Length: 469
Ligand SMILES: Nc1ncnc2c1ncn2[C@@H]1O[C@H](COP(=O)(O)OP(=O)(O)OP(=O)(O)O)[C@@H](O)[C@H]1O
Ligand SMILES: [Mg+2]
Image (spheres, rainbow, N blue to C red):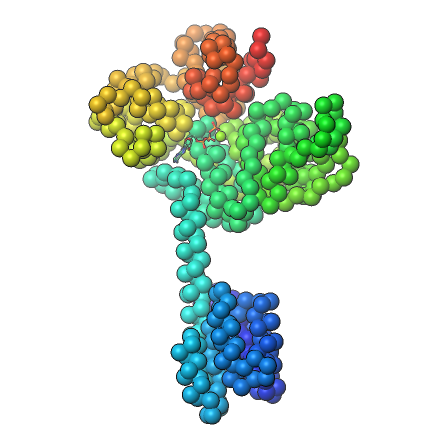
């Protein structure tokens, strides 16, 4: 009780002296006290502020005590009511109890006695309010996409998510590709006080600079040739809600500066605009890069990093939490194949557990999707699992300039035994082949290669394959 706020009391009493004495005494006991000379004034005070306990005289001008009690109980989340009565109105007070008053006190009463009753009433109300809040919280949680977490590290991450979500702090989610960063970003939004407003996401690796700027900040008519009307940027569409900046470390330098200013001043200019626009967004960002590296090599501004890194949640790679593999597999199988998915044989399960999953949960999901399609007679055996899972090779780190990525090469380069100089070429050829195969459809290409679209975009830029040749 000691760390709680003092209970808030409202006294509705028409006798001025008595009202004043009561107020002073209750304040001396540590309560926060307001007072009203009649029922009408009391109702007004109840509109303006949150009251835990209403002390209610019975005979009052305008609206009397009994009527006030009735009206109070028509309101959502009413205070507990203690009736204050003279000898002549004891019977009325008993009647009031039947109408839902918490208690009554007959004048004259001792202040210690009043103190005890007020405390009990305040405690009762708090319990009631806590109950409502818990129920709401539960309802919200069940609306969450499930984040499977058995391992201590994932449970710890979930605890952090629950703690930070209701705050206004910006959050930076780090972790290898496929570890669940986007899932976590959604969870933070849904558990936040902004849950009813929009969640807008932007993949900062997916556009080239000028497009990215107008996506993010919008533009005014005539800002550039082709800009016929005004277009609202994602930052504006996220007003009141959450803006998720995925792959945030891929933002070009000029946009980093503009974003920093927008976050600091809570205002920004649309492209070609001269009028400042106000916004109120909460930033949640994600990256799979190593933060020290991107700051040290100058690709990411440290001041922007401090701004968005109010709170960091890092998601461990799947190989560091192998105990999550089995529950994730069961969960994903149901997601993919419905309530009665095919069953994995014990050998198949062992293979999944033993593999090191460089592409993390996304790779596990892809692998299971394939296995479900190939399964026979409701069973998934070793033969339905991809060769890299059943015959894992020695892992070879990414050969590209992404020495700063936090993750391994997601199995893109299986021919990695060749000399390092040609590895880039091997990867480039693989990507090119996949692009050709899909008619340069980026999404399908990423799927074939078993990498996330954002990783593909990064590679396309590295290899200057952004445009079809
Ligand atoms: N703990 C988890 N429980 C259930 N599903 C998960 C979990 N982690 C990841 N997933 C699922 O795995 C897939 C990949 O997750 P997500 O897209 O959030 O990863 P990411 O970290 O954003 O990857 P990238 O960096 O490549 O964008 C999604 O389908 C997601 O729902
Ligand atoms: Mg992602």
